[in-house]
Image 1 (cartoon, helix red, strand yellow):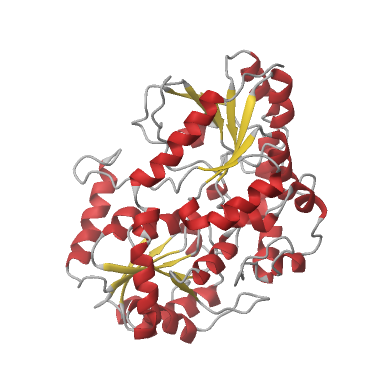
Image 2 (tube, one colour):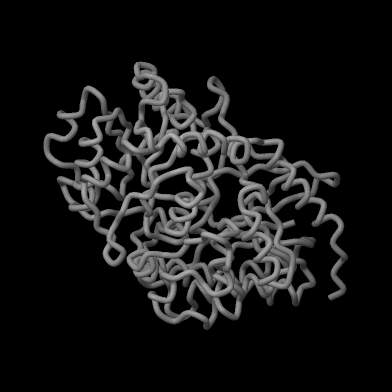
Length: 452
């Protein structure tokens, strides 16, 4: 079996689920991204390196969206499309019988069909996002303007359903789409060309949407579970000593705080905010009066020399910690001092937080499906979305402070805290989620052999 993930969506963890036949898995990506994988992989996983072709406009060292600003992402997709020939040559000289692909390789279904190889489209989106996008026919031609994505589509008639994009989120994502082959074309081709679809979700949480996408696609759509990450062993977890040093510094600070008194703030590695937005966010955090850890990614610091208000860190030093660079997010969320998470609404981050029962302060990063996830989690009442202007995404420091306090300490937020705590049994329960991985393995093993 081969697994192809695009250079701009490499998973931070790769685990081999148990399987009767212990198949050999070829994990295919570019050199820099393969080096980002853990060093302790199963011997049944073979890493296959395909150098990323050069493309005018793409920095030479870039192989991931983490390496470039959003306006350079179309060039990354152009480079990725040039992997068609080397990947085809690899498949022609291998004994692969299944390939698991992401959405970007719109050309891959026709390649594997010609070679008689089965394919699975693995979407890192949840079923709610896929249901919102609709069947391939609608993905390709049903909605033409950004405004069309700001309303609930006609094929969704769930009771009390209010999941749609805000205009500023759609416009922001438009900037990272390639002109020749849009993301919508890529997704539609992946759905139409595969044997079946797997999605990172769980029927206990996403039942209605999962049932709907099975009907919309006219082919099986299987849940793969939440794929919750496992908290590393404290003494033997890191690939190098740097994580241990980072964690020691953070745990000493957290150990001095009361249970569930700290709000953890992190906007991911790829979210970029303007200087004004960063200042409004900082002022809101300060006005909340609560303890916090704010992790600043590289992109949240590069916009201007004063992205954090002058004097902010001094004023909050008795209760707040501003952390620059990478932080061991899973460990922080697991600490008993953390009670809530102000998040950009990336699905992986949401899964990590709810796996430990942390209530969410929802601040959409305005990329991919993050806006839909914000509406979904707000509607599920496991978090509260920070109110923002629909058109430009602006917000005030007052609503930031109010949202944080509601989620963390106010009486009206108690239901959110209780609901989030209960979600540990869905998002963090390994036995439940591993069951779906085993069922996926069984489908692969029992699928009729190709007759091509």
